[in-house]
Image (spheres, rainbow, N blue to C red):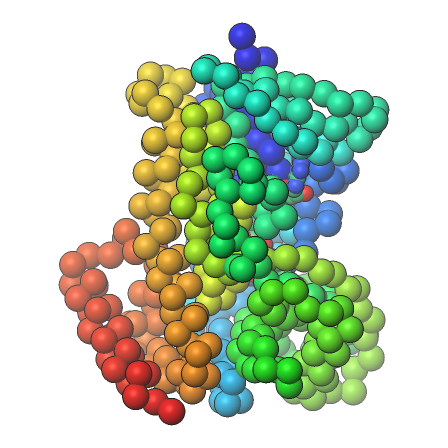
Length: 398
Ligand SMILES: Cc1cc2nc3c(=O)[nH]c(=O)nc-3n(C[C@H](O)[C@H](O)[C@H](O)COP(=O)(O)OP(=O)(O)OC[C@H]3O[C@@H](n4cnc5c(N)ncnc54)[C@H](O)[C@@H]3O)c2cc1C
């Protein structure tokens, strides 16, 4: 007999929400997290889309800044400003740490310094092997279902989730937490900035500035592998550009951080037998913005719902239930975003055409912030008309 109903691997937003919501419905849950402190080593700009805290029942105390504006800066250097509802920023220490604390409150057993090593499956259970960093021992735990949520560094080449295009979608990110000696200009704390440009070495770069209470998260991502020195030089140049506008003549200290992000299409397989896969490990990231926290948390919720439904006999297969919910919610939009990003990057002038159109048609900009399955028929028709308009103008632009 399995030891527990559910083992969750990884305690980011995907794993944390899955564990909390499963346990809340009576599913006996263990989480394995490789870090000693949940969230302490996550590298992220930690921008939350409007309504995130309410949707996932996370206290607003984790919010650092309300950021109702987003500034999109195109490769030509032009800036476009939009309203984005009540977007917010936080830190991953607070987000992941708070979700983990809430999960513990529901009875989840979160084992930290627990490095997942492998899994074997039989007809009705899975046995997970992990290295217990606290005792130096190898341990096993068997479960009815396993939810994998290890993020972009998940090694899944072998087994049911293997995807040969995965390495091509990896983005190298480098970020500074920049602590100014006195506050930046006030507008910096109310705006998320996203910059799209082509570097001196002809690489497509996405860079950002997300404000926090006591620091600014300033970073960039470049597709593929790139030398550390080149990445640092690029980021230093970007910081200099921002400083002139946002914190002129202000001294600062920095903390450097690096991580991989994924910007390809979602994995074709995300559920198989006893195993479910969610969050960034499943490729649930918006390729145009790098946003993946909402997608991770939602996939965690779907995993919990699937496991609960199966336990209560409401579905014959948690895997089928989970796959349906997750692909329906995200696959259409995320595949489309990946296609859009590839289209934009082929001719940088297309960024201006898109951003101009978004700026002049706020309804279009607002709809793009929604998940596709939320749309009504008139909204779909409006979106198709806007997309056709953009497609025509962008195809002829030089
Ligand atoms: C620089 C950067 C900036 C970003 N900014 C934003 C943003 O502003 N807004 C946004 O929405 N998204 C952003 N993202 C994307 C976002 O960080 C991810 O989409 C999100 O963290 C995915 O959550 P997750 O739970 O799937 O995985 P993660 O948050 O990566 O969590 C995975 C967890 O699994 C653990 N783990 C990994 N391997 C093992 C193992 N073998 N055994 C046990 N545990 C393991 C890790 O320690 C970690 O705690 C950013 C990403 C990067 C890299």
